[in-house]
Image (tube, rainbow, N blue to C red):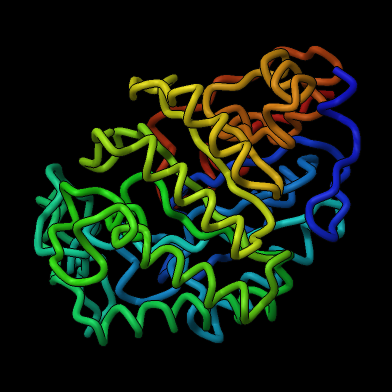
Length: 358
């Protein structure tokens, strides 16, 4: 297990190990502001070389879920500074994941004046929890106008600037799991007839414009992206052009020069397996750091690091109940199982009360 626990370079950063804490929504940010327990949660897990935060909205329009954090206000930015200070004090690096939920949302979860947006006015199948009225059907999104596309890019840029002010080492653009950026990639959610819809080149345009605008503003070495080809989350499923689209997207992201692609495989949760050829194409086209995640244990991580398939490996669920995951891996200490019932509740239980191995 030497490779997993050795130092790694990420752009101009040095990570203390190759273990990444994957982004996971936890819904603990009351009023969409991360509080003290959020800072404690990430501090506890700062054994990871790199932490990627839960999805954090760049815009009031992107707050589709109850109690998810944002980073578009001064109050939110100051609150995140407490998080980054605690993580950095433990020697870890931290990127904020910028997640605009797009059509995955409900007006009852949004601040006054905000709206549910999408590439096209096509709702996602399924329901959404609201603290006000319980479960509700996903809303019909408003098809984004050209002006709203431009405004949204500006929101991503502004949020990225706030992230740097808050002390983050970079931002990860969430273009996976069925949220706004990925909604542009899929012909089922993107029926546009302008330059943002139709062909593969058009469907990847919005993601590339966001990536370019953010990287130009805060630096390529601080800009990253998460992708989930062959995912089956939030009513987006693989389609015939998946391989070709993601191969081209990786090529274009390489031209922009972002620092990493974080590729997630949801097959351990029942989604189709990511085609090895697609991973290899992305690996070949993209010269930056490649992070792989999805159903990994330490042994499989070591194998993919040693073979050169991955540069870093991200772990999600194991970090929920094992804040000291790296120590447990190193010492072969059994992992604790997480409590499914407290994943998205509002308090400390099932969040910051998991045991540290003695």
